[in-house]
Length: 377
Image 1 (cartoon, rainbow, N blue to C red):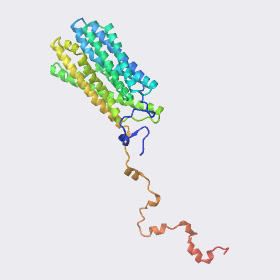
Image 2 (image 1 turned 135 degrees about the horizontal axis):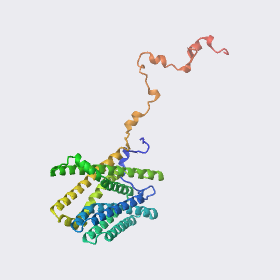
Image 3 (image 1 turned 120 degrees about the vertical axis):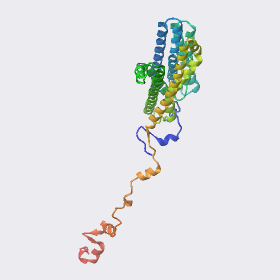
Image 4 (image 1 turned 180 degrees about the vertical axis):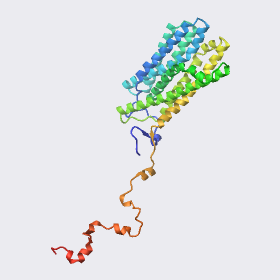
């Protein structure tokens, strides 16, 4: 079986799907985990700051309550990703120092998530208004960080690192996509009627989810490819992550978004109910936003998984069977037949042994003619 350089043949897919352990039995680390942790913490701090500015700039009362409900999903998603990123970096440090001890690794991941959650809750309580909604935001944010840390305690650290990278890129893209929403509304025919506005909003949301899913899948595939090359440079015998790892990494951002929605609806239920009770318009808005977030998570899940899987499939070289090798093997010279060999007299004319000829005469002719015999005789 031939392999192209840097590619994994498709015939090897019969081996175990995911093998995250190195040749010496220790789990493969997630490269760049410290940088991911810093970026995720920076994004969480940005979300907390923007939410605080929006709430404090609004008038006290119903407006601040409504804005808190609108800002809660962004804070919870950022906290979930930050807890996972910090726990992943801590897991790398523990594995490097103490080896592969599953209990210690999981405990360290929970501890990293708790540190992020407690720091975020403390920042919210110190900087936000001292209200009941503030305590809801702080408690839900802390819970999201702890859950994210627990997810990072898995053995397949490179796959978790890919999920964190893709999820962080997706969250940043959603915010960066905001200036493009108004032109897309006009493009999809938003007019003065309520029906046209609703239809345009659906298409804008689907476009955003589709692009976010494509970005998530490409980021997950790129991270796993980089992790694989880095591991091979350090250890040529490093194992290869199989297609389920790429599938999980591509679907991971969508799963995190859906998990964040579950946390919001459980931990932030009281805040959402208060915001929905303000008016009928607020109730419709909260219901519509919740449905949109669920749809967005599902789109990102499936599109991201499919994108990562297709990108991984393009790196596989075609499998070669025994029949293909038999056809590709060179034909022996003795077995080669000239296309004119079937003509009468052709084989007899050209099959004569050159070693038996001398000056155009055969050995039998020399023996029969004394003049051409050896003079010494």
